[in-house]
Length: 79
Image 1 (cartoon, one colour):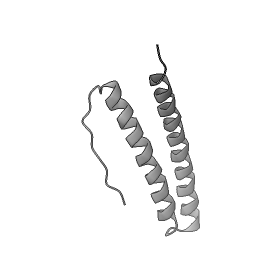
Image 2 (cartoon, rainbow, N blue to C red):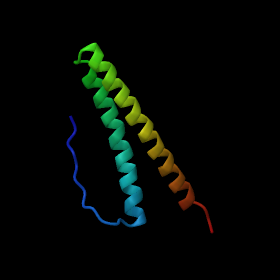
Image 3 (tube, one colour):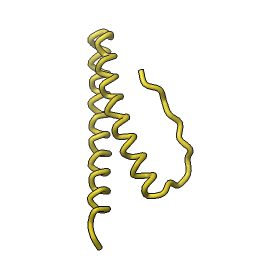
Image 4 (cartoon, rainbow, N blue to C red):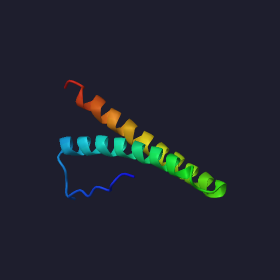
């Protein structure tokens, strides 16, 4: 299982925010994998619930990935 990381809260710089968003997106992908692996040890009814939660987490992570890609695209546009 992965460890939980605690971050200092405050207003990050744009570059810090981008780096943190990239980290969190990757981190969430690993959590999805871990949940699916963990579910194999659970009764079928509970396994289905965990699969649904993993699906929801994956959807949220996909949205974060899109946001990161848009941010990267905006940073690569010449003004």
